[in-house]
Length: 243
Ligand code: BTN
Image (cartoon, rainbow, N blue to C red; front, side, top):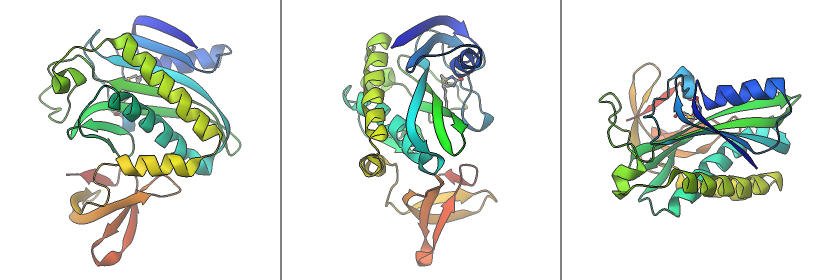
């Protein structure tokens, strides 16, 4: 495993993508930065993180025989690896908010941005970008739901140790994925899924509020919900807001 540490970069995902386009990059090459000037989040959002306080890293993963129809299992693999690493730090009430946000005590402490490279109908490799709030103590007022490990556990955490631990978990779980033990990954993911089987209020893309219950993730990776009168409907990432 090769870990490249940078003081600053635009985005560790973009840096790694640039590397891949220009040279042969070994499996499990990791780019970690103290600061990002253009950190990227899901759905074109920005990822803002205080310099030197948190983990911002990207891992290059080559995958064995993963068909695009099984893409969701790679997403499960990544989220579960973070959860398992954080469990060992005794973070309370850990959950995965679909698709890939990591919550502790209902606060978002980690975001994940996965960028896949396809050949034909297979995912050949992927850049897994992780932004984990570790020692940051204050967050912008427009992010009321963000928190950090420091704020939850009330203690400072060593960034290098935590990174090593997450990478170990990721390696182990990618082995499970490569062995095609998809049901193992799915069961663990669904067991950790925030609001699974709990009737809750959501908002759709048109702004309408509705009651529903998360029951799973569809083949296309969409959120499966049971609505009132037992109707099952799937929602893409832009089609649903958790309230
Ligand atoms: C999200 O929750 O929207 C995903 C955030 C992902 C942020 C990480 S930080 C390291 C890597 N580099 C990026 O530009 N983004 C990811």
